[in-house]
Length: 113
Image (tube, helix red, strand yellow):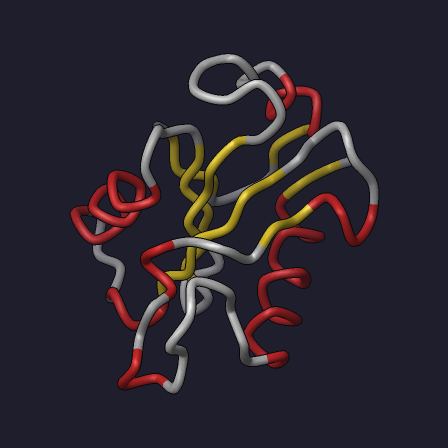
């Protein structure tokens, strides 16, 4: 598991394929601190890592990165940690378009394609 605070090449994410999954790398993004934790079997492990490093759970959202796909298919917005009824997200999918757009913006700044 690693925390990305600056930038990472997409090739480095591709190198993570096979560690846990063959087509994706799980990630948790902190939309307040603009940080991304990558490469674990469970989103909850990445969430715990970010919390240990000063993140607040309310700003953490689980995503899946498909580094071999392009544009819209590159990011999946589904994770069990996204079930947050107190933040009007009652499903695994991130329902708030503003949050999804913020995640896309952060990833575009952190991941060099």
